[in-house]
Image (cartoon, each protein chain N blue to C red):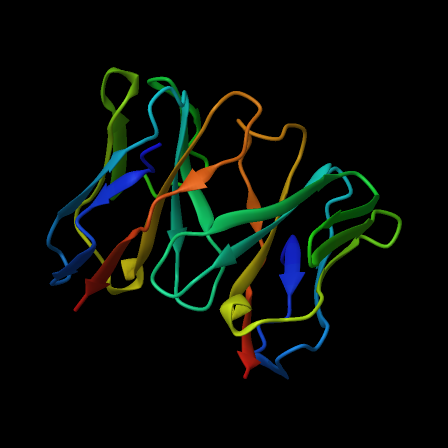
Amino acid sequence: QKEVEQDPGPLSVPEGAIVSLNCTYSNSAFQYFMWYRQYSRKGPELLMYTYSSGNKEDGRFTAQVDKSSKYISLFIRDSQPSDSATYLCAMSLSNFGNEKLTFGTGTRLTIIP
Amino acid sequence: EAGVAQSPRYKIIEKRQSVAFWCNPISGHATLYWYQQILGQGPKLLIQFQNNGVVDDSQLPKDRFSAERLKGVDSTLKIQPAKLEDSAVYLCASSPPRGEAFFGQGTRLTVV
């Protein structure tokens, strides 16, 4: 079993729809949870991070962490064609920074105009 | 602020040949990472440096991969000899203390 599981998609939704992306994990020691966005032929860029359980909102993006279920989600509201990318969840054990990241496989998302 | 620089962007080599990748992190970032991203998978850490010391190289195939970080700044990752399964994107990232990791654009390696 992989430490972090993520549905690879692909996922296609019409512009303006709400997108839900999810990851599950097996290591209960993970403390920091991140979402990265990766455009084609680019490196991943950090979208959001959360510490432990709870919600965090940033503009059209909301990250949720449920440590009791070992489940994290990223919601994108009012999706735009520019949101088309691969979304990677990532986790680390004890620090934000200076700590290796364990990634999911990534979900490829396409927003249809 | 300049980002993480990597070169080359693309490399095609035959199996059993050797190859080297170069990374220049963001100025002042003490931590440097090399990740391997195979097509359709998430990045996997190969090696992590703190300044010029190795913090984690548990997933580095040491029989063929080597890495060094010169004077705690630039880093090179070498593969010798390459295998077909080494075809991947090699991503370099750097981070400041208790800050997010910034990734370079990666080097896409194809082994034929």
